[in-house]
Image (cartoon, rainbow, N blue to C red; front, top):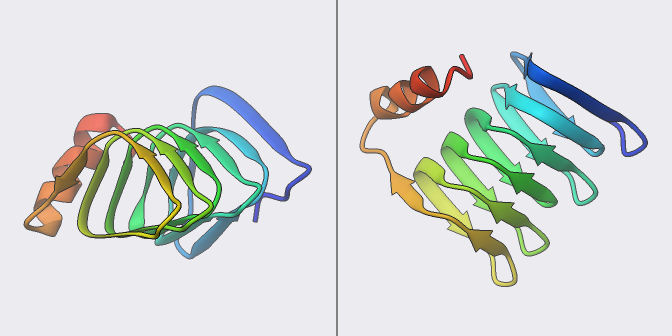
Length: 116
């Protein structure tokens, strides 16, 4: 968990995990975990990748996940690569939605971006 009073900045920094990563602070880095939750007060500048990504706060960068949920309070500026996308009423999304027909397509996006 990255708490709401924590700010992590680092050029070229990548944060990875195998479980659930809850981000409630400010992160200037690429992030990859099995499940990523950007909390209502969370802000990520960089690529967010995982099997499941839920955004309640802000993301400035691409999202790449099998399942993506943009909740009503979310603000996303960047392309979303997904197999399943849910956007709640009130969510702000500036970018392109890119549907992937297979996990191999998503893996190719992550490999190309260097997040893995």
